[in-house]
Amino acid sequence: MAQLIADRRDVDFVLHEQIGMVDHELFEEFNKKTADLIVSEARNLAIKEILPTFKDGDEIGCKLENGKVTLPDSFKRAWKLYCEGEWLAMCDDPSVGGQGMPKTIGCAALEYMVGANSAFMLYYGMTHGAAKLVEAFGDEEQKKRYMKKMFAGEWGGTMLLTESEAGSDVGALTTTAVKKEDGTYAIQGTKIFISAGEHDLCDNIIHPVLARIEGA
Image (cartoon, rainbow, N blue to C red; front, side):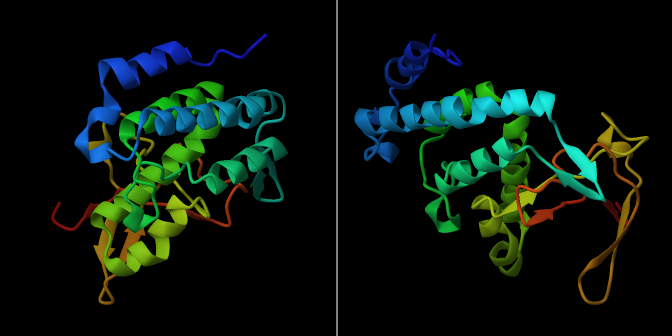
């Protein structure tokens, strides 16, 4: 029996009949054939590589041994193929290492991938979100050092927001950041519930920390 993660007819209807994505002047090079091919490749990756991680994530899961967190081998294989296919930054500008695809196509692709295993795709979400933060607010040195490696999936990313007394009320955070003479910040505080905070999919993980600066 074929895997039905998302109804392809519904996906095609939204892309081509409801939105008329390929008719938009910004995406003239993305004709219907190209759009359909991208969605088909996303579906294939989701079914053949990402979907098997769902079972392994449930039965094997993450393991903490000798201070190191490891993931099932299927996660590593799927992540490698996901990054080699340049899916992580598929809708981002080519200047930052993306492919510049329309976000409508990106959403269609993600519907299959997230549907296959939302836990696996959390690693994408955390990494991409952290990279976008650097893109929006980082200086050129930070973009060069962190952003492109994250968009390529070579490095992972997280978001350090929640504290024991500041969950849904993030504004109640007490973590502080004091600026030093060299321009860096001394951070003091405790964060909890750090999604994708430690794993072995990447060589390095970048941790953006939400903290209160002096006077804020």
